[in-house]
Amino acid sequence: MNQYANMEKLKELKQKANRLPLDPGVYIMKDKKGGVIYVGKSRKLKNRVSQYFQNSEKNQKTANMVRQVKDFDYYLCDTAFLYILIKDLQYLASVSNQSESC
Image 1: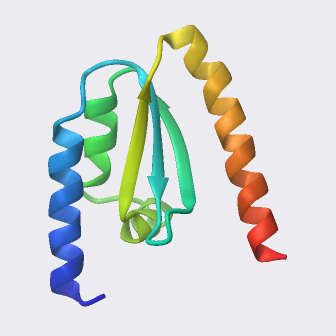
Image 2 (image 1 turned 120 degrees about the vertical axis):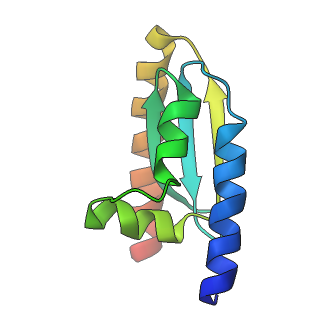
């Protein structure tokens, strides 16, 4: 994908993130094949997810992940349920990534 296409995709993701609610939930970052590359939680989804797509400086690990993100999903949930759900999703993502590398 060329740099212009990447900029357009980043713009789309930023717009999608800005439409998120300010509610607690879980977000799932996906690559171009729809594979899970990151699962996170937040008390304010809109604020947290939109940070990834700002033109601010990021550490190398985060910058590399953001370059791979082609879409994201989110699920609203209260704080108590959030921590249980995130643990399960992180486990499923790690198992999925391990099975793909074998």
